[in-house]
Image 1 (cartoon, rainbow, N blue to C red):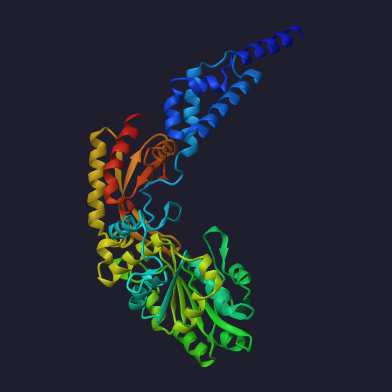
Image 2: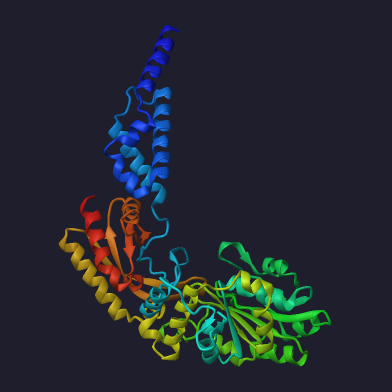
Length: 468
């Protein structure tokens, strides 16, 4: 008991030596924090570190009162951690071109420039400067989309999941929608087509089987309650072997014969054929429109290579219904999205997508160019005494597009006794470098590293690797 009493007495003595918040506020090192972070946040930080110091003293975590300077230093760290941005640039050296976790498609220089021109001030988002009257934000990308796709009208919302939901709610609510069992897909984040249809208020009618669905399956399911036929392109998986499904053209003919619309969730937003660059054939938006689809929905930030957006194109009568639906306002695109999307679409109209859109630059990059870059990186690292190999490898499109398709690449493989430790240090750099780990090697793929980030990445690699 005497020992416990002495311990409590000593703790109380140490607690009394802790400075007050007011005293810490007057400390010289606190003054810059007040200027940078303001009085309220600085007060909160000081109170937090004092509370932590009290807990350490009471639990025996320390046997002496921390110095005032150290407490203010802890407050500075607390403030930096609180206000450090959680969204910041990274170097994508994974070889996955449309990396969902790393923000999907990087934007073209033109798209970034137009964002910078529109973001700081006011804009013509919903204003017609010719008439001086209110305008419509849906017009900004619509003319480009209709010209590119041949659709009668177009509408842009904030992502493709929202586009599909609006399409189903606006055109099918309370009625039946026919879909093949082989297309009841789930994409990233647990987003499932059956769940979306349930939320839309449309009644799901499944036809066929997982691997085989015939035109007559759809034909037998059509009734007075049928609102539409829905085709969901399986962009993130492939069913191979004993399979069959009707073509879009066949479904379009059937739907129009029965006077119901054919809806198409195309997903990837491909406007170009990637097969000349080694990719498996992917149905494009233009293919869907040519087949007679009435409404098609697709993403802006996958193979289109633009900002996150959901794009709906199709027959004027149907798109007009969607434009005036109350949900359309809740999921509409903002001015920055519309500006970047318009710039991206302009690249396609000018037939310069391969030269200017980063996703297509990466897809079309010749293996000879990738190899030369890899060898250059390897040479620079070897000059610093870092052991590397140049290996054959594969890049992937990613983003739920073209599953199973890869592009040949060359990998810079950094040799180390602790690949996980090296990868962690690279992730914690000022601009994190994200690679892959295989056979205790840290692998870096030049195909997905943006040219303007190369120098910073190499400086980070040299600094981290030479310190290990």
